[in-house]
Structures are given as C-alpha cells and as structure tokens.
Image 1 (cartoon, helix red, strand yellow):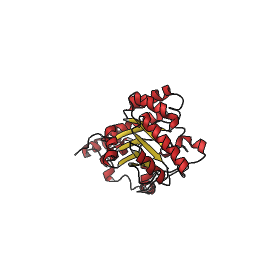
Image 2 (cartoon, rainbow, N blue to C red):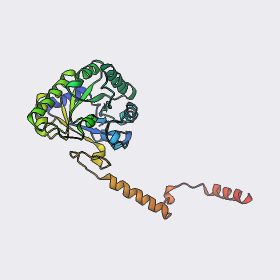
Image 3 (spheres, helix red, strand yellow):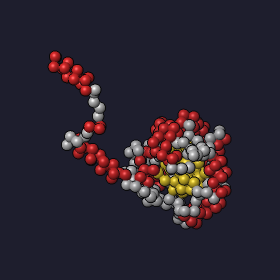
Image 4 (tube, rainbow, N blue to C red):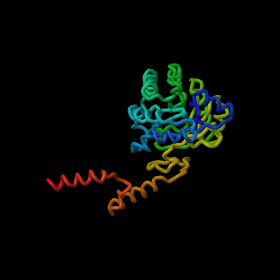
Length: 284
C-alpha cells in the first residue's frame, strides 16, 4: 500500500507521539524514488552537493541555480517523502527581502515542501519573514558548514555548559521565529539532549547523539560513495565506490578482449534483410 504524502503537521506530530524521524540528503531522481520506497520520511537537497557531487572542497561555492537544478528531479521522484532544500551561502544572509525572494524561488521553481537555513539568533528575523510568506522553514544550528571560513575547520559544538546554552538560545530563537524543525549538527549528545527536551518542535541529529527526535545522514556517505571529506559521525552501510571501480574495470577488460558486446547485447536484422544488404554491397 502506497504511503500518503508526509506533511509538515505530520513531522510535528512525530515528536508528540515519540516516533522517530528519518532524513536523507540526496540529489537526483533515482535515489529519491528509492528513498520513498524505503519509507524515509524526509529527503533533502543539501548544499553538501558541492562536496559529494560537484567536486568543491566545501559548500560555499554552491549557487541557487545549482540547487534548483538538482531539486527538480528530487521532487519528481520523492513520492511520499517531505522534500527539503538548503538555501545556499549568500542566498539569505544579505537582507530579509533577499531571503524571502530566494526562499520563494526554491519553492516556486522546484516544488519543494520547505527550505533549510543555517544560523541561530542572527537569522531569526529572516526565518520569521519567510514563514510569514507561507514557506515552511527547517533550522540548522551547531556546526554551520557555510561558516567554515570563520571557524577554520569543522568543530564539535557544545563541549561545555556555556556553549551548550548558546546553542539552546539559537534553537529557541529559531523555534520562536516559526521553524517547524531544527537540525543539530556535530553537537555533543548531552547538549543535544537538553535542547531536544526544551523545544516543542522536532530535532534532527547529524552527529549529535541518540537523544533527538530523528536522524539525518547523507546518502553518499551511507553508500560509501563520498570521495572527499566524510564526517566522523557518518555510518557507511556499503562501500559502493570499490564496487563501481571493480565493475568498470570488468567492462573495460571485456571490451579489450572482445567479450562485450556478446550476442544478447546487440540487435540483428531479419536474415533475409541481411542477405539483401549483403547483396547490395556486392553490386556496388
């Protein structure tokens, strides 16, 4: 039986009912179809596409056009999943007006269900304005990949009581602004537990321990296809990179040795037509 489309109210109910939420970052039609078949709740076109698909060293270079391009096929394949799209670097930082305009572009041009924004107290007014425009927002606090240039490297967040309270302030500000869910990335499990217990909206963990309302991972990390930086918290369920290299090597070997294509891999004319063709060639 096909699942009903998951909506924002469905995600909010999960926290009240104590039911876990699953979110997977992916970037194309086939994987979106498969995620829906697997019963995943939310799929996201993350700006991590810069690192896992486009070959950038971080998420900073990713553009609105690249996000829109990849979001469209994910929406077409998403089935029952709620579809989230990251707002890329500098698509919302400059002004409230620019933030609302770009969030509207993502919704209008792709058909995604909601957008995700990195930041806490400093972006609360932008989150509020986007929600008031009728666009659901997921927050993202803790480690903020779009600010890696300021941090110098990716660091675990909430290592002491003072920093944990700062992250809580960010979470409460984003919740008050109208976000319906918040991702906590690379936050210590103790801090994430405290924040989850204080919030009325669901929390999703990305390397933040088991005490959240759900978990989020990148499909490329899960499948063993990430070729650049892989977060320590990611779990590799498969190692497809090795399998792909092996299969491509087999293909090359069979072509070199004349084993591919075999009879079942190509088409033939009707024998009479083949004779006619051979006859015409002889006359020439």
